[in-house]
Image (cartoon, rainbow, N blue to C red; front, side):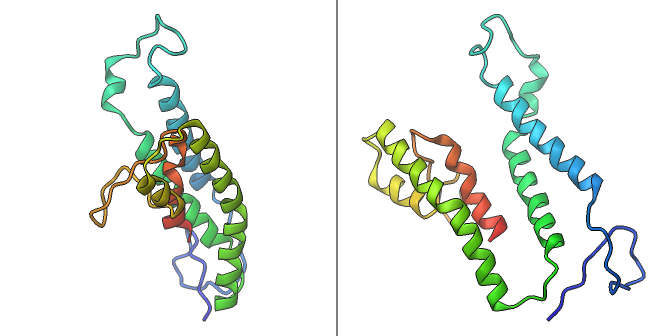
Length: 165
């Protein structure tokens, strides 16, 4: 089974010719999402960086960091699909999942161990849930499980597993 590459401007349905898959608009949107996350991290540290700095009240109406991370994942998943040039097969899917696991799992397990060293009294259900990438802030499937106290940044890996796998 071969999937055709969808490209902006190609409305004729002729996908047989190989074309460049780089899309500067998509990269721009990914960049804006990343900047939104970075600025939120800086602005919502409140008085940590500069005790005299008080962000404009309007920034309180734009808590876009969480949504921007999810948007970044959606765009990145789309880019992964665009860069796939081989025909779909079970073997290709297996190789993709294996490469992702080799990339993510070792450092993830190290991060969990370091988080447990930082917070050794973490509840067992939270630790097990984080081991299986179930941590999230949005309740879905009637489940909401916080990330490890010692490493709050692992919350996004749940979404990475959902979007990229």
